[in-house]
Amino acid sequence: MQFIYSWPQLLGEMLMMTKTLRIKIKIKI
Image (tube, rainbow, N blue to C red; front, side, top):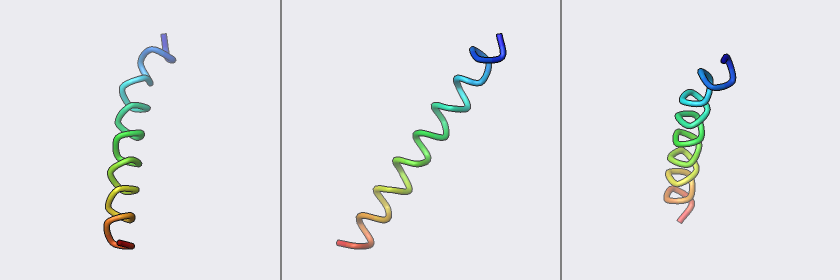
């Protein structure tokens, strides 16, 4: 049950990571 409950948080963290990575790439370019 805990694993299913933690899924939304994991997805949110992944989205945040991708956003930060895109911002970093934009700053580099």
